[in-house]
Image (cartoon, rainbow, N blue to C red; front, side, top):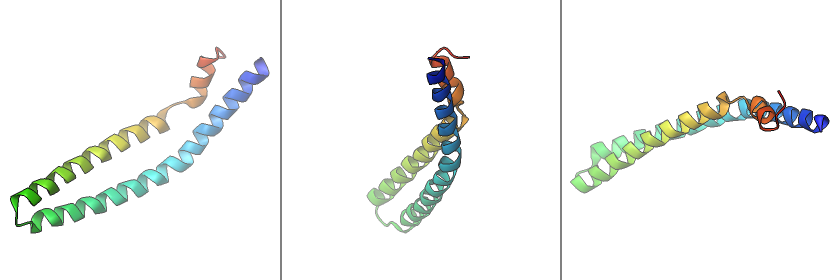
Length: 94
């Protein structure tokens, strides 16, 4: 049983390492893409002649900002978690 717990802790440590290496670059790419999209929406907002199109562009910009915030919070939580400690506490191995 103890060997299984050590394997689980090692696996959790590996998951933590992989997430640290992968999540950061993915978040940078997503942030860059969302920033470009917001600029495109801002141009559409500025060029729109119709109030309906202006309202639609504004709604999309707000939704994009909300998406950026949600992704940033989830990435911070994902990277900030101590996966090894979580696995150890789940299986009662301290």
